Image (cartoon, rainbow, N blue to C red):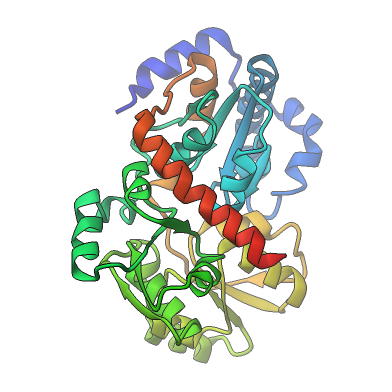
Length: 350
């Protein structure tokens, strides 16, 4: 666990991090992207951290990869690459920087390290885990293989490097149906998200999809009844769900897709009102690009994603902590599974 008292003392000795309205005013192009969801006072608090981080990025030859669930000041203020798991996995292979700072959860940092073994990959908080990734182990993969001999294992990228290495191929929420449909086998094992697997099974009915009993603590909380009640109170609202939600929630929605798919849908459709059935920061991060859309309704926050803050990013770049390491043999197996996903996804999209 990070010692925040020590970190704050060390950072204060090297940087002027007091709220600075004048510096915030100079950063008006950044603030214009988040002014709907961040107050001027809060941005004056963020501005010194953003300035220090961006200066250190240049000094360290570092790039920040940020998932769509990062808070707006990270997503718009310091990120060099933003996207869903697939986008970040692909972009991680293209990064020219010597240092990658992964603003997301631990399995994402592992994936970046697997794809960039010669680079330094940092995660600002090692405690930024994932309940879904922690629900499956190598032993679980072996159990599924024994239950369904000969069936390929398709593991969600929301898994550890060890689980990826024990799998045949990876998938993300944006390409899961495409990957499963592209495999020649009749029976396919999907791990660890049972809801993603069940939603994929509806999209690929000619396959016999079996799954591990895992789920995401954010998306499993939504219910179809909640959505029906919300729709009755807010007629005309477009409900947009992530495929990690239970199948009845997806069925109740107007559209279901990955975080990248959700962004593309909103940008194309421009609904008057939209409820995003996913992690809270999504709506905040795309609000500025879609000013005609009124994002309404409840959301659930990922406690792991929210462990990543500007303060911890600055400390990570300042101290070069905490580096993510993956055993070479495990990394090679995981790299093959991720690369197969990227290659098959690009081949099928051609």
